[in-house]
Every structure is written in structure tokens, then in C-alpha cells.
Image (tube, rainbow, N blue to C red; front, side):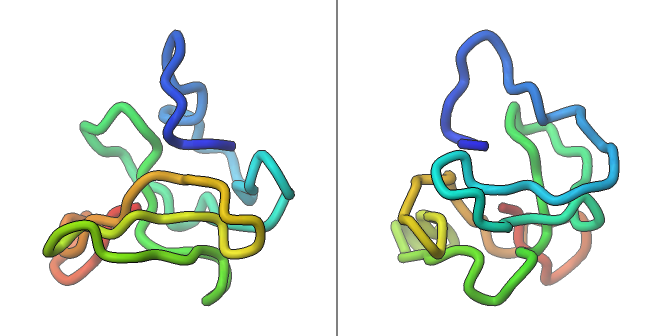
Length: 92
């Protein structure tokens, strides 16, 4: 799924069934439902990736990283450092 697309509502924001979220372009595993949590953002929110190389990222500004699929480079959105549900956790 591409998290940056917002046409008519994000279908995975309120989706909490067990499973793995994958890249829409290459099916690479990105996030697990175990790391998903409710957030006020209009997009799904996760605390961690499935694999260390699930995503690549580069800093856009302090505390915010642009995130792409670690396999094909598909744009996924951002990682916000220290904005997760617990102290010290990031929000993807």
C-alpha cells in the first residue's frame, strides 16, 4: 500500500486485522499489524518495520525522515522521531 495517497480516505487507517503490510509496487514486507496503533493522523501509524531493511530513509528536517520502500524505493511517507505511542518510539 502507498501511504501517501489520500483519495476518498485511507482504507488502512482503521484496519487492525492481523497481517503484514507490503509495498504496493513490489510486495516487499514493510510493517506488521503488531506494530500498528491508533493515531490522529489520517494515515496508518506504526512503531517499527518488519525487517531492518524494510525501508530506507533520509532526513528531511530534524526529527522527520522521508521513508521509501527498502527494495524498490516507492514513497511511503515519513518517520517522525519520538512521536510514537510511548516515549522514545517513532511513528511511521
